[in-house]
Image (tube, rainbow, N blue to C red):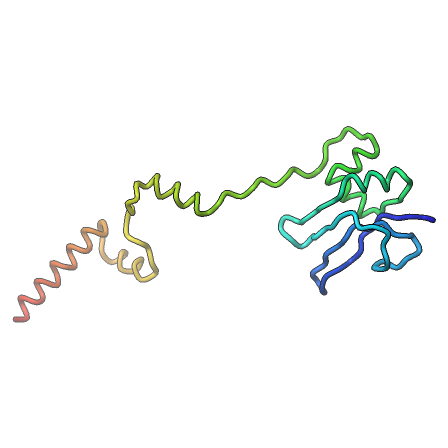
Amino acid sequence: MAVKIRLKRLGKIRSPHYRIVVADSRTKRDGRAIEEIGKYHPKNDPSVIEVDSERAQYWLSVGAQPSEAVVAIFKRTGDWQKFSGDTSPSGVEPQKEKPNKLDLFNAALAEAGSEPRGAAVTKSGRSSDAKVEGTPAEAQQAADAGAAAASTSAS
């Protein structure tokens, strides 16, 4: 029996997900598979590639022929280099874990000394800052003085 390692397409229109399967070469693209050895989600950012390396090495060793797309995936994960004895490095570096946003916020808060540095900037705040020159505290004092002068002259 001629065995191939190829991609089985799943997912919706314009949202493909693939399973890396071992199947008889005469079956349909999405037909019955002998074994599923991985998955590939190209639309995710970064794309998800998961391969059961032990099973991939087994099927390659017994003569299963990978498709071109599967060879490219195996090269990215380093499985093709293991099989062929090639010494070139694999094409994928493991993704670094993203730092927790809460930890980043707490670190920034501790660095700032738990005190806000200035007034919050909003769209309405930007237009009023353009009219009044100086720091926000000076602008507030000028506005308070102007309001007090207007109330005394009106009485």
